[in-house]
Image (cartoon, rainbow, N blue to C red; front, side):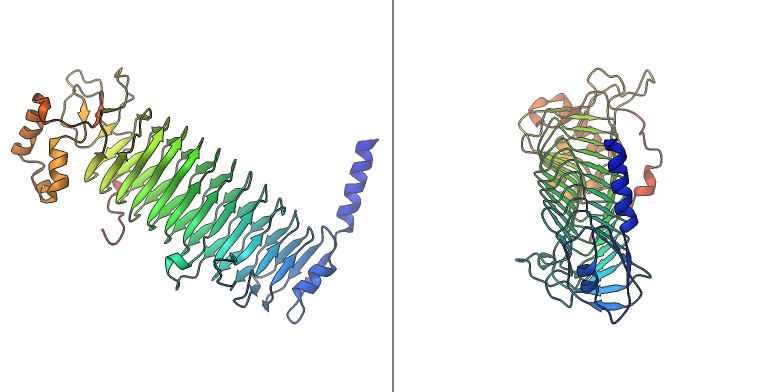
Length: 422
């Protein structure tokens, strides 16, 4: 009986929902004020100059992509109620106060379950600011910042602060400070986004249990920056042509980073103070430095990655060898395109360990012109001699059983995808 009563009440609410249509010359804010919970406000083609406040659970739907301009003042739309949907609008021209965090759409604390889909957010300081609102969904939006502003004076494309279970899916974000800025936000999913022409494609801080999957980050300063985080899954992404790093892991624990393409960056991976991280099945190709590893980054599992045609495969700063791959020789090693060993038993595993950061690597760091001699007999002899005389050796990354063939046969399609300044 109780379930039947609840069903009847829900049906009555749905039946009571009203569609309110707004045409040019009418006020959208007046329509919002007159709407009841659950109503749909449909906005026809046209242009409005209003700063909207949505304090009731309702749907704001654009027909034919109407434009809502904040006239360079405050937030263009402020949402304070839970269960608000904004769909199909062009939202633009917020104010430009970093102190007040002006945004195209500002989702205030308590505005849980907000949905923003199919919108164009353009020339706003922050595209979307989402604060202390849970179960928010942001899908299929195009977000472009104030591209004529200096990077430090722009806001972020989507800013998540102190949220739970956000879904950020299929958005195209560019010309902002950071395309995605995620702070103290947990159990979120970021999937299928294109993040480009910004400082960082994504910038995580103090956030746990998030999934980052099937995203493209390119032509930024940095592709993906994970800082002070744990329990992340980063898989099947492509981060390329970034002027600094492809993926930064800084003070990271208990993360899985797998099956990503990291190509044409200044540094493919920048790993600093990372522990208990698994790097598996990644293609690291054509970067200036494949992996920059430092600051006590140890107790990590690094297996079945392909390191191909990086100018320096590994730049390592440490006091002792770092063991990568599979010491047991059971095909868990990494592939290194500059490996000079052999495979006498044809089992697909090199008979000699691969050692990065050897005397030849260090020579080329100090004298880059020496790279022209990489293929010469003299340089190869120097490598062999250095192995025979440990006094010449410094700690580095050692892969005991490197693989002889890469797992990514199509790796060459990622060559020459570099940042224009490189």
